[in-house]
Length: 331
Image (cartoon, rainbow, N blue to C red; front, side, top):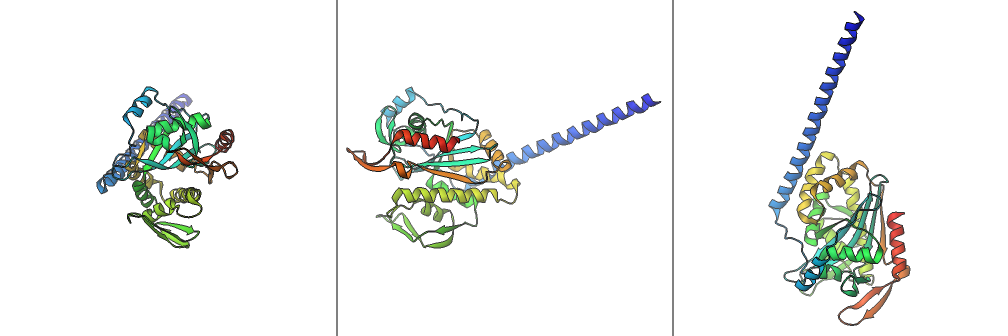
């Protein structure tokens, strides 16, 4: 009799286990399907609103041949973190694409650490195969791969992937993350108008709520005594605010559609799988704060004029810069 009861109990437990596994499987399939649907829906919506042009530098054919002979394969982060080269690019009409924003982003989910190092565009470095020049010349000469190679050679920082955002795409991304705008404390009046009148920046001192276009203008302003130094500081400030806004999104169900709507404006060598995995880690292991650094540091930089066509550069003690950068990223 007891044997019969025991067998019945085992059968019940097996049935419960099967039901539980079936429910979990259905939940997984539903979540995966919903995530994919929302991601693709967001992407389609973004593409229907406008057709972003591909972000590619105008590379000299001979230089491109040289670079293709020595392709750069990004190296994984030594601790398994996500190490990404972030580039803000600008291309007008037939002009050669420029990268005014060069940043290294390192996110370590287990440590909930998020670090952002901005490299000044006029930093004087050795560009592999091209000699000494400003670091942003590496992008014009060989695109993001040559820029990653330049950073690896000069600073010993491996960067497995890159992501590029055209400035026109940045406005859309900012509006997608913060449709109601972002509250920014503007430190002083910022006023600028280009000769052709195509670029106008008119922002008043004080607390303002800025939309995507205004955030872009705030991030790009450099027509004062601080120049690029002030611009880098404002760029880091805006990214920190966008990071906070991302983590304040009321429901995680909105995240897949948000990522899909952003994706068409980002040119990256990372696949969509890694893109989604990194986003999942970010929301499951949110960093407490965004730590920032500017390279070269204030105590290790001086202006120096080089022969034409290089012109005025930011020179520095490269060994100190390498130590400062590695200590910041990996400590």
